[in-house]
Image (cartoon, rainbow, N blue to C red; front, side):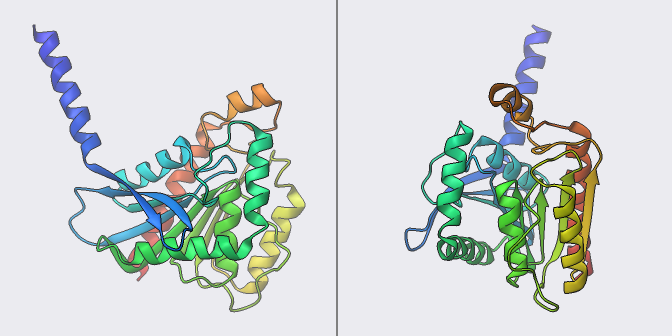
Length: 261
C-alpha cells in the first residue's frame, strides 16, 4: 500500500510539473503557416521570449521538445513551422526536398519569421527588447540570416547550423548578439566555413560567441541522431557533453542579454 501511495504521489508530482507548461497551437497570418506556443504557467512577470526554428526534418517532436525545455526554464517559446506546410520528414530525401522548396522562396520565409516575431512581441509574457531566436541545422542558418538582415532581436543562437552565406553582413548590419555552436568533425560545416564566419562577424563588428567542439559531428544536440546515422549512413551523431555545454551556454547567453538591458 505504501509503495502504491508513493507511486501515485510521484505520478501526481510529474503531472503537476508537466501542467505548468501551457502548449497552444497558433496560426500565422496570411496563410504563412502554423506554430506551437509554449508558456510557463508559473511565470509571474514578463521575461525573455524565444523563437525556435527546426532542423531540416520540419517541426517535429525534437523541435517541440526544445521549445518546451525553454518554457521550463522560464521563457516563452514559439516553435515555428518554417516550411509552412505542416509536413515532417522521416527520410533525408524528403527533408532535403522540403528545405530546398522553402529556401527557393526566401521572401516567404522572411515573412513567416517576421509574422512569428510580431506574434511574440504581442505576448504579455515577453518583455520588450528580450526576444531571441534559435535554430538547429537548417534553422541555425535561418536565424543567422535574420541577424545578418538586421532583424530586431536581442540575440540569435545557431546549433550545428550552416555558417556560410552568399551575402555577408556589413559593418553596422547586425543588431543581435550571436551564439554559434558547431562540431569540428561536422563535414557539413567544414573548417573553412567556420573560419569564414569568424572573419565575417569580426569585420561586421558583431558581438558574437563561437563554440567549437572537437570530434563532434552534425546534429550533436539531437538524441536521435545516432539512429539516423545508422539507418541512412549519415555523418551525424549525438554528443551528450556538447549538448549540455551548448544548452548551458544558451541559457547564459539569454540571461546575460537580459541582465545587460
